[in-house]
Structures are given as C-alpha cells and as structure tokens.
Length: 390
Image (cartoon, rainbow, N blue to C red; front, side):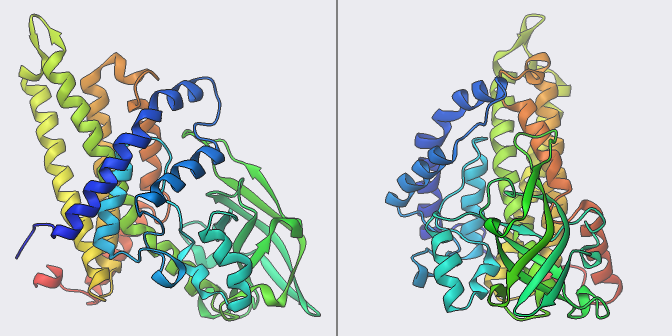
C-alpha cells in the first residue's frame, strides 16, 4: 500500500498551488474590503481574467475530455487541485468546465450550449431543487406539458447555485406525472433565459446567494430536451453525485489554511507573558483539528480513487462528504476560538469561512441523506464493512 503521490500528481498539485499563491491569494484583502462595503467580491470579468491566466499555465477543463480541449484529469488529481483552490477564500475556479451532464448534448446542442459553456461564453445553472423537493429530489412538481412541437413549463425551482447569473438552465421537469420522476417520468430541458423564466435572489448567511427560478408558461422546443425523454432524474442524480468528493476536497483546503493561521497565531499571541500555544486547551484544539483533517483527506482521496478504478463511488463518496463537511465546520470553529475576538471580525476571513462552510453540511446531499445512504448500503448488503479492504 503506497500513500505517496506520483511525480505527475505532485507536479500538477504544486503548479496549481503556485498559481493560487501568486495570482489568487493577493486578491484576498481587496475582496474582504469589497464585501465589508456590501459589494460583490469578484466580478465576472475578473474571474474570466484569472481563468485565462490559468489557461496559460495549462489549467483548463480539469474534468473536460481532451476532445473538447480539456485536461480530463483522474478524480484523485482533481481532488488534489480542488484542495489547492480551497486554500484561498477568493471564489475562484479553473475555467474550461461544463456541467457533467451537458456532455449528453446532441451535436446541435453541443454547438449551442456545451462548447460556448466550456469557453466561458455562456453560463449555466442546474435546476432540480424545489420548495417541496430538496433531499427528496424525486418529489419535484415543476411540470412540462407537451403542446405541439413545444413543451410548456410551469413551476418553481429554488436554491439554485448560479441561477442569478446563468443565461440558460438545465431544468429537471415532470413530463409524466403518473410514472413519477424516479420511474422515468421526468425529463431534462435546456432552457434559455430569453425563453422568459426569471430568477429571484435569495439572501443567505453566506456571501452571494442562490436563486429561485420561476417558470410561468415558459415554452421550450422539443429539440431542447437533454439526453432522452424520461432520463431527467437519472441525469440529476449523476450531476449531484459529482460534488460528493469535490466539495469535501475544497473543505480540506479551507481547513488547512485556517489551521495554519491558528498555529501561527498561537505561536505569536501572548497572554500572561507567554504564547497562548503553550496552553493545553489550545494545543488540544490544534491536535484534534489536525487529526480530523488527515482522516478527512484519506476518506476523500479514497472516494476519488474508487471513481478512477471504475467502482461504484456512492458509498465512499457519501462518507467523504459527511465527514469532510463536519470536519471543516469543527476546524473553523476552533480556529475562531483560538483567535478570540479578532476571529469574529471581518478583518480576517475566519468569520467568512464560518458562514461559508455551514452550507457544506446541507447542499448536494445533507448530512442526514449521507447517513441514510451509508446505513442503507450496509443494512441491505450493498457494501461490506471495510470497503475495498474487507
């Protein structure tokens, strides 16, 4: 058993780290200043400029197939890069990406949606969650009714990431109510904003915010079906599953950066004539954080490894998502405690992380849903205790 990174993995990770350190981290103070003034942290043009700089480093389309100009990196390598991205709180991601299910586009749709999205000329969002269908995604109600050569969409989606900025949405709608979403009664549609859906900003405790999407007799041509009719729920689950190792990978980067700040602060901040790092209470918070961080890292890399091996990743990814999300919340909480009052201010990014990472236990599968998946797999004999080492 070899826990070492390959030379290629190490080289890619180090190059990504160098880019984040040189090009992204220097923007942090300006971003905090803007957010304190209630302004957007990073404008679309600034994000685009960073992505084009990264392209010169060779970072374009981490998961995008080579035939579309991407890197098509293995899942483990992608996980390592997402950890590096997480080291900075600037909302940056490498360009050249498209939602994984957009690759189900037919040739005409590829020209209209997929290729412009990869190039950053178009912006998409994925819309499955509804006011009454969050964890129970199969309970979606937004309807699509055939009318001649069109489909007429009515209903609402909510908590849609990127929904305020997107110029088209991938919408999962019910096309056969009798069959239901899970049994082939839902279909995915590519719906341009100009087809008259509207987005409404949702204010959250984090920076930025998701959107509600409202569809009121929105007409969508039959040619805008993504994949096959009735395939919508399957595509939706494939989209959601993608995030279950990338989200905790990002969390590891946040936890590493935050814990590093806590260690530096504990060595320099003095009370009663000595550094606070000499206090056992501080030492134990640091020790617990490092232990949980390393445990999460291994769970996440194992989940990514199962993807690369062509194995069913759902069980391992659910454990990675559950533990990684909890870990980063506990670490950031301890880091804030170590920093005391300064950690609570907006002069440092700690309170920003505190608000940001709380979402990790909710979106793309709540803690409770991950526990349900993990326990169900064991109780029904879908997996063995100990996984691949059993």
